[in-house]
Every structure is written in structure tokens, then in C-alpha cells.
Amino acid sequence: MSLSKKMKYSEESTSRNFQEWWTFKYGMIFKNNKALCVLCSESVVCRTSSVKRHFETIHKTLLTKSADELKCFISRALSSKDAQSDKLIKFCLPVLMLQSLSLFGENRLVMAILHDLNQSSFFSICIDESTDITSSAHLSIISRFCINDEIREELIKLASIPAKTTGENICEVVVNVLEDIGLNLSKIVSKIGHPLIGFYCIIHQEALCAKDGLMQYENILKLVTKIVNFINARALNKRRFSLLLVDVNSIHKGLVTSNNVHWLSRGNLLERYVECLHEIRLFLSENQKNYTELTDINWLCNLMFFTDFCLHLNELNLKLQGTGKNLEFMFSLIKSFETKFNVFIRDIENHKFKYFQHLNKFLSEIEINETPKLDENINNFLSIIKETIQQFNNRFIDFKKFECNIKFLKCPDTYNYDELDLHYFEWMNIDTFEFELIDLQSCNTWKQKFIDLRQLIEEIEINRLQANVRNALIDETSAACVSLKTTNYTPDIKMLSSKKQQQKSH
Image 1: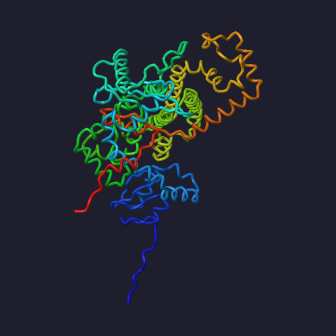
Image 2: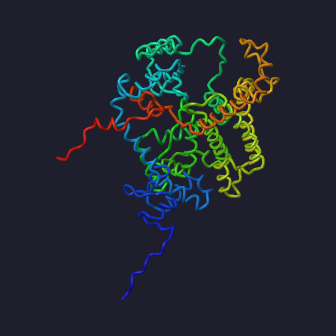
Image 3: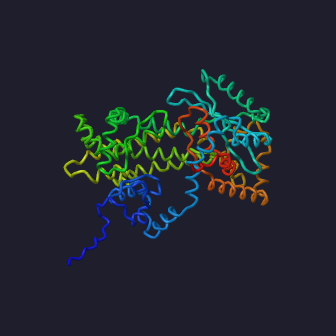
């Protein structure tokens, strides 16, 4: 009698069945005949190699953790009820609330905001005009006001601009909106008794630095965009390429496109292109499309550096985004990144490429007889970084001039009077300013007040939620979605669900 042999456990098993050990090692659960990652909610085919590649690519930052730390991290992700609640709200709120949010004046969220605005002694407004990909102009009207000891920023209205976007048209739209919803315009902080200090948008300036600093790589971007458009612009090509990615067990489902309006799209386009480079070559070969650049070692070397550098700039741009960030905090991010430029230069000069992962991987995989002209390429890389440094120096010069005053506003109890640029305060009576500053710095009570204030600011920074709100803003439904994304108010789930009729058995 022959005994059936038990299959030996192996991580390299090619079985398409879900393996339970994937859950505790890679954070995968079984759902809809696929492996679902609890860390990012992406689906992967049930194959060990695919699951492992997904984890090592998408969650590569976790590879630095020890086995015990990684196990604890994945266990928390699996058992976290808070994460499940967030997902429930994310997917259920549109069903429960879009009906009430479709009419601006009749939803509870907006009424709560308007109630608090009318209760405030004063508030300020910020407006942002944006034109989406359909060439429709929209105006975001955002308010900042105080509720007890809390400063809030809330979207009042996402309004359409019917014709031109001149200052007169924008002012007319703002006034009409505020009057229609019944706000007291006299509470708007408009007359402050002294000249305003104007600055250009920091996020926009950073995006322009990234664009102008990498102008030398415009030809690379044009070719990459051309190839991506050849695949994505035609429905048949897009479906065939998606099937090719499935056949090779790629973690991606397709390529992404770039748009000049979307500042982060260039880095995302290049990153996806580089990660699918082998499949792109194969697809183009099958369609008799020949691009010599895709086999040119030096061109590919520049492509990898271009991709890595764009991703660093994207990371900075994302850090600058979000609500509740003040000038001092945002400019500290700019200064930090300017310091990192020196690290990038040293990393390239030493040929380590520690901070340029795609470039490092590419150089480690090429054959010895295919070594690129590294010295020439390195000189090119350094010139790109230095040009970007120059762009940062030129565009942020106004912030650097005001830097000492920013520090003084936060730390007047420790700042040196001689370092101040007093021409910004000429509207004040500063004849006795130096004596008053000495008195403040000598008083322990006032010094302790500023110490406590800085500790409170640090707590607010730690607890502040990050939000990415830039989107295609089309109609009132989009305005509702933006409000849900950015608001600090919490929905009354019990009340909303009580108004929905339960499904009855037939």
C-alpha cells in the first residue's frame, strides 16, 4: 500500500492557492480569489513570487525592520479597528451624504461651518482660482476662524467662474457667495492698519524650481510621454499592454500619464515607466516600434537619474501640501531640502548613488561591456543639481530675507535685537522697541509663556491631519467631496443612517 506523501512547505511554491503564511509575513488576506494587501488595499495574484515582489517594491521601507518589529506592524494593521472604521466611512459616506451635500445651503456640514463663522468675532478668507482639464474655471473660498482655542480652516464654497478670471470677476463671485449664504462681511479681516507683507505661493514656487531646474531633460520627457501616449491613447493597445503586465505577474495594471497642471504627475509618470521598462520594450517590439534610446545605456542612465530626482522633488511638494501649515514650518521644509542638495552632490561624486535607487539598481544590473560614460554622466547630474539649487536661491530669496523676522515672531524671548530687519516694522512705534524687548527677555513669566506656547504649537503639528485636496473640480458633487476630505467636523452617522430605509425581505 502506498502512502500519500505530504507536500513539503516551500516559500517558492508556484501554487495559485492562497497561502496562510502570506498573511503574517507580507500582510495579505484572501478576497475575491486574489491576495489583498492590508497595508495598501491593492490586489495581487495568488502566487508567492507576486506577493513577495509587491511587498518588497511597494512596502520596501518595511524591509529595514527586524522580524519581530515587522510581525508586530503587520499584526496591528490586521487587527486595527480604527483602520476598518476609516475605510467604512470613506466608502459609505458618499452613499449617505452626497444627497444632502448636493444642495449647498441645505446640508448639515455647511450649516455647522456657517454657524461657527457667525459665532466668531472675525475670520479671514483665502481664495484659489483653478482651471481643470475641461477648461472650466473654479474658485475655492476657504475660511480661517477661531472656535474657542482652536484655529480651523474650512471650505466655504467651490464656486464656478462664468466668464473671465480677472480680479474684478473673482471679487464679484466671492461677494455674491458670501452674501447668499448669509455671512456678515464686516467680520472679514481686511483692514489691519499696516502694509501687508506679500509672498508668492511656496508650493507653486517649488514646482517651478523643479520644472526649470530639469529643463535639460525635456527631450527625455517628450520621448517617454510619446511612448506612454502610444500605449494609453489607443484602447486596444492599452488592453493588450494590461494583459502583458498580468502575464508577467507585474504589480502594476498600466502606465500613468503626465499633465503640466498636475505638478506631481511628471515624477509619477517616470517612476511607472521605469518600473515597466522591460514590458514596454517587449510591447513596442511586438508592434514594430523601434526606439534606439531604449537600448542606449547613457540615455537610460540619465532617465534613471531624472526619475529619482523628480521623486525627491515630489516628496518635498507633498510635504508642503495640507491644511494648517504656517510660513515658518513650510520654509523650514525648503531649507531642509536645500541642505539635502549637498548630500546628493556628495553621494554622486562618491559614485555611491545611495539616494538614487533606480539609478543604482540600473548600474548594478548592466553588463561590464555595457558600462556607460559614467564620468560624463556624473558631470551632467551635478550640473542639473546645481541648476536646481540656483532656482531655489532665486525663487526663495524673499523668504530668506524675512527669515530672521519669522524666527523672532516665534521666539522673541531668545532672539537677538541686532539680527532683526526692522524695516518691516516701520509702521509701528519702534523708538523704544529695544528696551521693551530687553524687559520681555528679562521677565521669567513672559519667557515661560512663550515656552508653553511653542510646546502647544508642537502638539498641534504632531496631531494635524494631512490632506491632499487638489482634484478635478467640476460641480457641486466635487465640492461636496472636497468638503468631506478637508473638514474637521465629524458626520452624524446615526442620524444619516436613520433616514435610510432598511432593505426588507420579499
